[in-house]
Length: 111
Image (cartoon, rainbow, N blue to C red):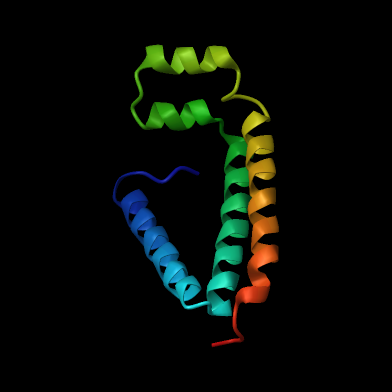
């Protein structure tokens, strides 16, 4: 589903707070920050894949109030419909997860 209005704003603020906390933990090389980033990345990917399995990007842009002419132009490219976003989401997270695995060795224990 797409969140909008006050619920969407609150979710974005919560999401920003989680990322800020993760950044603080990572700055201090705490493994909890590494795990938090991994968890948020995986949950975000699952959320995106679930959402775009039922909705397309053009629907999201319509809900955001984009003009019909602009949506028509995006539709002509063919990139915003079908499985393209699903594949893009899946493929874009692979290097990030690989990097997370690579840097894991630099983080301290549980604290």
